[in-house]
Image 1 (spheres, chains in turn brown, purple):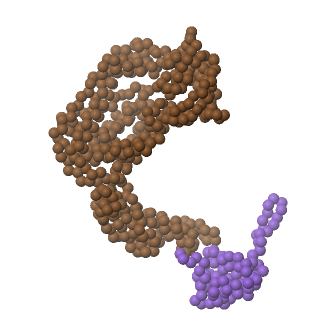
Image 2 (cartoon, rainbow over the protein chains, first blue to last red):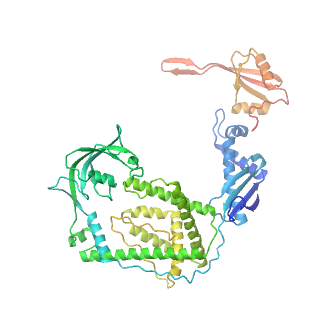
Length: 453
Length: 95
């Protein structure tokens, strides 16, 4: 194997781009090809021949293209790793492979093009004064959290003495939609229970139902805007046929000791209130810590300009795009009003790219900081964090445990913890422990651990 | 040539390969009515080789039954064609 390294900066604006050219001699390739044919010969079944007795010429004739492609891919995989080890370079992302000589009879020549990490010598990061301030939860916030708990435990009661729908009601209603002569899927003739509120329903549909009378069907034609949160209605003029069969109001449970005991872990309202206050305080502290870490990191980034490897930006961009698409899908499923359209508009892609560059820059700096400070995360620390996350996962405990049983997910968590530790070492030189994830109420999923960047 | 189509296909089997390697013979599936002379002339013309001997074997088609009706696969003939020393027929060239 003959390996040559070139700087590929003439092909890219980045000085971090490298090209490793690998030349494999005829003998190396012929040996690999021959062993691939031998392997296939043992198993191949061809009419007229017993297994293992098919002549190599016939195998070459029938399976040659496939074997050559497999051997080429295998050689590229194997020798790319060997070549990178030999030249001592670590690509940021999987290299792009360009095959230059693929006729295996004359050997194989290919090049791997990739970006390397920039060398970062961090400076001026110790004298940054970032304060960590977590405000205590106000009494109104505690009351709001308790109200939310009561709303989740509310029961529905039929509305007596009122025939028209008001905001906040739940209605059992038939909402049929037609565009021209065609019915819109998802809006059938079966009555459904619908919450008439702007948080649960798009505003125009909430308006449609508000004021409707019980058992008095009516029809209305509505034009929905192109950016409507329900994709099926976007930009369409729809003929609605509505019939409200029943009205329900939400009846909140009294905030008393019985309610606190129903929640399971508390004996009295005072205990519930204290636990809620503590949970809110922990959340505020965690949020403040997260803000402080970001502020500190951004200030270190400001003082240490680095050249970004293009492939790292591309990776961050891919993650952001995937997240946006996932959020858009979730909104569509929940039929929640969306602040933006579900598809990523071209003008937003530029915005996403600059966000990806920011993320990539933060990742490079925080990793350099962790190296500089010799921060490591031990197996015990990792196991402890996984146990905390699993404990806080409530009903999804098993799924979360399975997720962190996989090595790649543990490695990702270890990386995030290493970054946290590096930033915390600057934020709190004394070494106070960060707040543990608070115990979420049983019916609420645990917060996912977030990377500090 | 009026006999075109008498040679159906080369017989690519383990036995065909063995006789090819050991005795320089090439095996063809031919029409049952093809004679040795016709096979010799056709092979010489098609592959530009010299045929020194042709031996043939007739095969009766296998019995086949579908319900109560019984029939046979068509009968066929196999021809072992011996070539002059140094002549070769490559069915799988370029590999």
